[in-house]
Image (cartoon, rainbow, N blue to C red):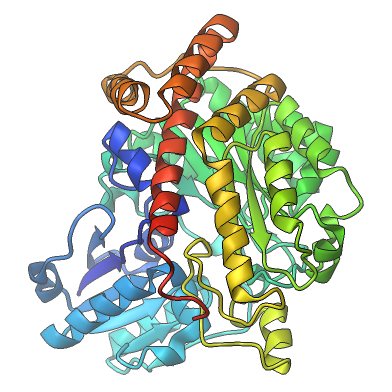
Length: 502
């Protein structure tokens, strides 16, 4: 049996880092972890190939080789996924689709031969059994949450690791919180399910044995959802493993803001090699936090919480949302002021959307405010419901935020604010290899000589060199990120949205 695993292309978005990747000659930020895990669940004797369309084109020869094409995708990859399905239908190769996009909206994809929905640990085995008997059904789904101890190590051998900026692994699924707009609990539940320490160490060892050295992203919905196990078992195991190998990896992940309340956990994380954490801030407006049930963010000084996490050695990247019913006209200025004051350099501001199955989706449906589906990119000025503020007002305010916070003067000011708060636990020897040297030289040319931010760029480099010279690689990295973000948002603002309310 010849199985071709295909990962559709991402559009150029905030998180694609496409413009930044060119500096280090990488083709994609992360490999398709889901497909690599699925590959390891398939019978060993089956032939398997992977085409990540973010890395290389999908050619007809590859489709013609395959007996089945497995496709997994996020909502933002919908357009590319549909193109793959159309090509498979034209050639006559059968398709098997799963992952978040198809689980949430499988009825919209009429041409898929077999749907393997929800979590593959439960739905893939019966599909494989039926396929081997010659009688596979059209759709496999379940309401059960699998035990993650059943999850095998991803099949890293299908990858060319050199194409990627980072690797990724997963420790847990699910989140204990119940934010109205979030589809995590729809897809993965509210009770965090976790792997054991032996599994995590084995996955790290597998990456290491395949030659990876560099960043590793824990893709968990909320890494600290099962705090007791994390502190008692997982962190000590990672610390022991990584120290024995002299820190071959650095880690980053996603967590809720209440991480700032747990000093012991923050110390363990930075000791294990974590240096960055994404936090959903959403909004500084209390009424909007109440509206969306973001209870863990309420009744706290959010700026102080961010600063505390950064003082413990974890750079905070943040998610922000505008478009809540409770948002006042001043929300745009308040978001700008919060982001600048907090020193969150990578601030992803998006418009509120209602993913299918969420409590927000159900509420807006009852209020007859829904309009079709979502694009999966909350920075493209599209929105799938009628906002109370009015679409034109909302988009104008949104564009003001992103133009302001990513203007060079404000962006570099935020980097300096961050460096004043950030106290890294252990800065490793800077990676002075050829790709990073080339990235530095490209940054000098594109940012320091040609760029409109050249004054801010040189001011940052000189001040970092004088005050914290070992942070020069991070300073250059953040400067390059700013270049990417401006490219993305300049295109958004230059070309008025054709999508509007989708």
